[in-house]
Image 1: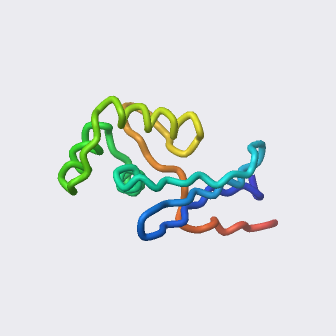
Image 2 (image 1 turned 135 degrees about the vertical axis):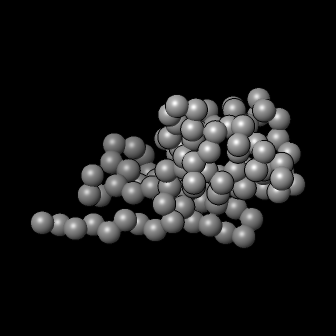
Length: 102
């Protein structure tokens, strides 16, 4: 989809995900809970929920297993992460992809 994008704007204490995808309403999703900001940043590389929770804990961010799973489920429902085979990866990119028209 040439005119679609899902980009991430990183701020010091928040992330704004700008949704401009074909077939979806334009939206800006704000993540401003420090634990969830750290979680979304970790998911840039893809992680299992267990690995994500351990990485969050090692950086001083505590979150209950159920709360983390619920948040990931909401992010998946909103199309902001992809899950497969127990792995979760963030879909928003840091920049608008280059669009080549032929």
